[in-house]
Image (cartoon, rainbow, N blue to C red; front, side, top):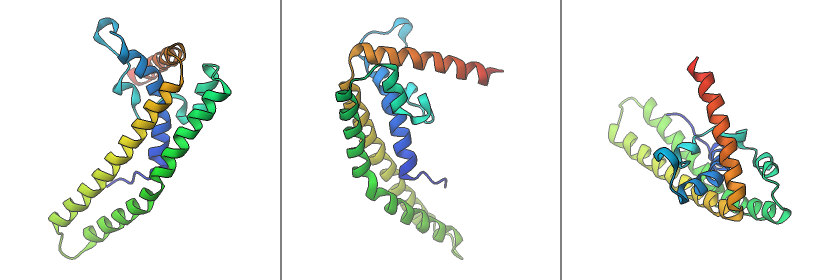
Amino acid sequence: MKSFPIQNLLRVGTVAAALAFGGVAAQAQPAHGGHHGGPAMMAPGGLFGGRIEHMLDLVNATDSQRSQIEAIFKAARQDLSGQREAGMKLHQQLATLYTATNIDAAAIEAVRVQMSAQHEAASKRLSQASIDAARVLTPEQRAKIAEVMKKRQARMASRHAG
């Protein structure tokens, strides 16, 4: 199984926050052509490579907004900090199970279920942080981010098309 440490989850969460700022605004109103800026816009490795500061600069975020958003993600990081060690233990358990003389499929599945639950809990926490952070920004700021994301998605799509 591929490792997905908490640091990567936090990076994804940071990107998700940037994406959610625009996505929340887009979901709140009917979209043109049936499309919206929701979960599809929250792909890992997305907007700004996790650089929230850059995104906040783009929308001229106030010092107050920056402080609030920083506090939101700091709390999320603290909430998730204990999961890193637990995740490493699960990966070690999995490695031990796969290198055993006899492969115990039920035990491997049990560890996979635990890993999946841990990832789900982290994803849920980061999603909540993203929502909280999006609420700090104005609808106009979220719309600006959505516009930037749309342009970036178009550039990425054109690179992958050819």
